[in-house]
Amino acid sequence: ALHRCCTQVFPEGLRTVAGGVVRVCATVSDHAWFSNLVAIAVIINTILLAMDHHGQSEQFEQILELGNLILTGIFTLEMAIKLLGLGLLGYTKDVFNSLDAIIVIVSWVEIGVGNGDSTVSV
Image 1: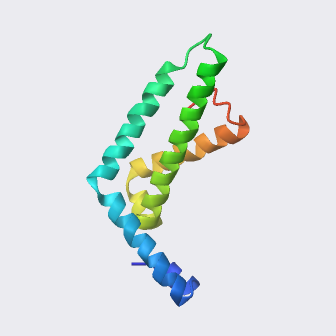
Image 2: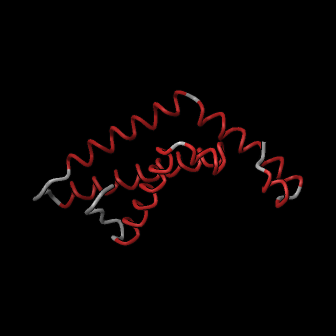
């Protein structure tokens, strides 16, 4: 179901589409496979962060930066799905979701400020 604020803002046809998107996001965010995929992304991210070292080649650094960008996109998608599916209040009830949101925002700031040069990865 759409959140109350959305029913007042969107015209009827758009409410139907938006309601469907919210239902799909709620269903997806509640599935175990979704949590498992996110956990795999976290493990891959941890491995990539551990691979960063002094004296690495430019090519290796570019691979790590690409991995950071892709994983930041995945974590952003996770955040969006949960925000749409749970709503802002439902999303922020879980402290870990709030922590994830802060990490995603800081990651995008890092990517924007560094022009993709992620010298300090989150």
